[in-house]
Structure formats: structure tokens, C-alpha cells
Image (cartoon, rainbow, N blue to C red):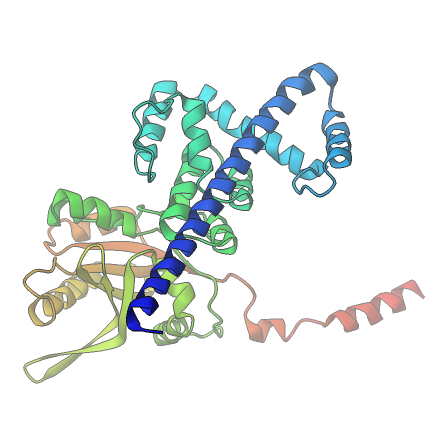
Length: 367
């Protein structure tokens, strides 16, 4: 086989893969649209024929289509809730506001630039939810409180290509409420486009419940555990963070300084310094972080890169105190809390009776 054929066959394989992906997306979109209308029909007819309709419909459809999945009583119930969640949300909120929000998001979907496309609220919602698998949709509409939260998780799932497990983890940690909630000085220290994007990269609080720490842990223990669980750590930090190093060494004259955690944020094109404090926020923490940002800007940042951003993670904070501390600092930084697993410490667990011991005591009581 000559080189021309090898190049050609590679192109053919790539075309097949691309077609398979497009076909899978098309099949998923058709399935989600079918579930939408099935849920709508069940909702309308249940008002006529009563609450046992779903059970009967499931039985009749499975007899007619024995090899078809998705016709169980549970899934038909989900299709009904699916339709009701979005249709009720649109009715309950100002239609003009929701409609415009959905239109704005729809414009980001590939191959949906046709100006003849229907722009009603129902149709827009259908096209949005059809971009992710049914299992993801179930998680979102059963766990979200309203349509804004649901749209947030739909967009995040699409942007980050989240698996169902990852989506479940983000919903459980209440990412919707935490994203962009940190106290920062970005508005005063960064240009408008960058300040908005930078703010959305921060959360409050950060959830590090995947760490396994002894009761008397220290800041360095947290750092080490975060690096051991680097995938989960980066997932919690958010899209775009690339890990550079921990206890990153910077020299100034003959003195050495060590930065807890150093990242590079690819979309923002800047370094990000993360300082961990296993105590409540104190104003002097901001001054030290400001010094570290200057060090990075003077030693690592290149001319075409944006100013370094600082993130200070503390166990607790007084919001007004943080706002005052950041007011006259001209380097971009934000302050958030971080939370660890609230389970019992290991040395306390060891003092509790085992299940076997409890069973023995219960047997004694029964006698």
C-alpha cells in the first residue's frame, strides 16, 4: 500500500467517525423530541382518563413494541415530568424574559442558524434539551428547582462534555448556586470581558469532600491530598485550569518564596495563584497574596498574557471584611471558602462500637 492510499483511508475513517457522531446526535434528538411529545400527550389525556393511564399505556405499548426500550411505567412517568417541568416553568415566569434567554442560548448550538426555525418558547426548549442524552435530562429536570438552573446544567454538560456521573456530582455539590459567587475585585482590576469570565471561574464555597484527612490535618496535608486527587480537584476548579505545581518556588534576590498552588487558565491566558488557609479570613492574607501576584507577573508572565489572578481559599470569612480588604488592592483576586468532608474523624470512629458488637448487645437485650 502506497502513502497516497494510507492518507486516503485515514480520511475515509475520519469521515465515518464523523458521520457516526452526527447520526448518534440525530438519533438522540429524535428520541428526546419523541419523549417530549409523549409526555405532553400523557399529561393532556391523564386529565381525561385518570391517574392509572400511564400504567395502561406502558402495558399496551410494550405489547405492540416488545423490543423497544423506554416504554416502562417509570420512563413514561419521567416523560410526563419532563414535559411538565419545562412547560410549567415557562408559564410561571415572564415569557419574554425566558424566551429571550433561550433564544440567546439556542444561537450557540451548531447548525441552528436557519432563520426560518420556529422561535416559540416550547420549540426552543425542545431543541436545547435534545442536545444531551435522556439520562442526563432526567437528572437535570428531577434535581433542578427551576428552568434557569436546568438551563445552566444543560449548557455546562454541553460545554464540558460531562458524563452522567460527573453531572450528578456537580448537581450534588450545588454548582449552580456556587459558581461566580466569590467576593472579588475583578470589576476594578480587569477589563470587562475578562472580569466577567474570571468571575465565572470562581465558586463559593469550593467543595473538597473527596479528601481523606486525619483530625489534626494542616494546610500542607490539604495540598498533598488535592494533588493526589488531581482529577477531582481540577473538576472542582472548573474548565480551563491547567495545573503547574504546588509549593511553587519563586526567588527574589537571595530570598525564596513558595506559592501553595499555581495554575494556568487557558481561556483567560493567565496564571492563577491559589493560596490555602486552614482558618478564617484575615485581612493580611490579601496583602501576602497581592505580593505573590506581583512576583508571578514580574517573573513568569509574558507580554502577551493577562495579569495573574489570585484565589484565596479559607475555612470561613466575613464578607464585609473581605470587601474592605480588597477595596484598595489593584491586583485581581477573589476570596472563597472551602469545605471538607464533614464525616466523623477516623480516631473518633474507632471509639464507636462495630456493627457486630451492636448486634451482640441487641441479642442480650432480647434475651
